[in-house]
Length: 319
Ligand code: XMP
Image (cartoon, rainbow, N blue to C red; front, side, top):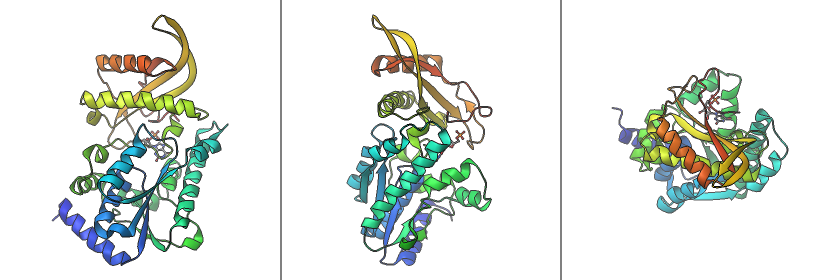
């Protein structure tokens, strides 16, 4: 019988059997899959688990604190938080090509993760949030983005000499099952039902070269959009929603002053599989409210636009 409770009991027994008294390492991104693995492994093996959470400076507002508060403070999971903002932004300096940005972010992530991992003694296992659709995808050896996505979610570049064996407790599960298990394990529902967030994070939502100041601006605008979506009960009705930073300037009047400042684009889509999507027809009044808040509250933004491109022909992300 499939119940979240049964699946959890089963997985716990399997994991205990698999790793014995060995130490296990997990790259925690704050996304649903790695979060559920963290909660599950914590229940199964407690202090044998160490998580590494890399703050690359491209996370959403308050995301790092949220991860630390959920896992480290409330659940007592051992989480090492690595502040790697300077390293990531340093590497991205002068880089404008989206695929190159992705590659740099992915590689830097692996480097930082390796550094942390090599400081730990005696780790024999690497846990990953691989779920069933990932297994199918990589079996099909698809080219293009799917592979790129996996390459930095599943840390593929660990040094040979570490020779870690894999623990993948979600390998047989679909996303909705993973979510049910997450809830049963006591993860907050805002975390379990979060919209997907790309591995390269705000790095592909700041068009062109990534600047620290622009990330600060984007985080604030994005936060307002998401907060209002939740307040209006629209968050769960759309599949993914976010703000994008456009590195162009536009003239506006804020208060009595003429402003020549940046433009924020808002994107919200409805989709089942993220392969095709329609732009979410969210109410004009709602867009109006979000636009006003962003222009009034976020310094350096003079204009907000809403993206009405479907996929195809557009992609969901702007880069
Ligand atoms: P696109 O933009 O291709 O996005 O229509 C489809 C879904 O994939 C996410 N996405 C990524 N996820 N690394 C990721 O982990 C990436 O490089 C990446 N690019 C896009 C996107 O957010 C959407 O959910």
